[in-house]
Image (cartoon, rainbow, N blue to C red; front, side, top):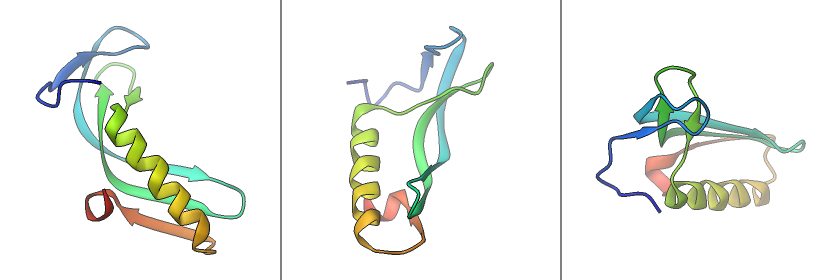
Length: 83
């Protein structure tokens, strides 16, 4: 797990610096399109690679699993309201 206070890390893809940022996570599950807005991440300044820490990714999985049960074609969720 990464340190919550860390604001800069090296990109796993290219080695340049990645900084804390906010992104939109989208996944198409076939029957439902899930869009999660305002997700905390680390994003590389050089290549744009996005990495989530373990806690954030765990929350993303929970949100996606909950969206599957809603039987909606599109589910748009604000991360800060549900995580």
